[in-house]
Length: 405
Image (cartoon, rainbow, N blue to C red; front, side, top):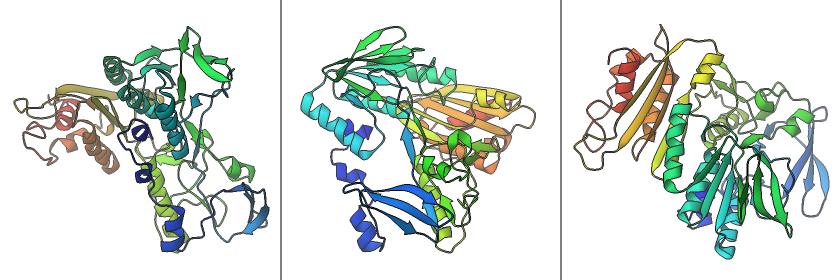
């Protein structure tokens, strides 16, 4: 949605992977849009369905049930929160509404509440459209899935791009005039706004399952096994509403990402269709671009490692994305975290210019494989001056973590 809002993508149809018509005509699936499941009756193996257009309701029987209700945006419970001019950005429809407002009304000042991925990507989109952008974040840094030293690099880039950052400030409400939000009120100031974007994160949309006494766990997400089965025979769940397993911490974990949801949906579908598939878990890989900066992370952060009671070593290096003499070589910072003694890779973060962030996939693969940093050093990674120094930045960081640099 941020790329549609920012006119990077101009045709909204390009954002639709498959229409209901395609499901009906090519897959033979009876898709019923504008219908909502109101209740799951496990004893009768039925769901209560309501047509949201005319209110008609009935009970639909099932042999197998897949719950894929996704996530819901976190909305603030503060004065003025329901005023016009306040936008979430969690569905295609919400992106269309925001784009229409920008195209039609030409607002000049925007305030974003929340410094996560959506908030940062939307900040870039609005800056590109010429708005004055302020961003309010209650934590000491944006993108708190990075360690503070790496998050500081993202903050620096936002300021360079012209975003006004207000860190460690809590939302207290909205100033409203004629039913419209006119300013964002924090515990420290009032920020005038023609429009407000909420980027405060999401939570699992698991109420339907919980009301049916289906077990939930981490952050209220639905508990499933490796085959995406709930504890109830014939009831499955997948996507942003379910709990995952973190392969590094070896604990339950909740993450709302399209990559994870797609994999889980495939596994659930294979099993529902009579096959056999498993989803072993995640390592928490994520990537984004903020103006001229790329940022990515995988595995555990320092605070998560400390929470597990593990001792660890840190390797943080700064170098170039290409051979230093090659035109276009830019700065890249790589941080690796490894378990003290064993050398087991625990996590990594990368921040830098174009060509930096996708290197996180090397670290994600190493985490899945359970590599130590010493085992990473001799990985046969590609090299040519337009793409990398002779020693890739990831391998330089691994050497330092192993005590060899």
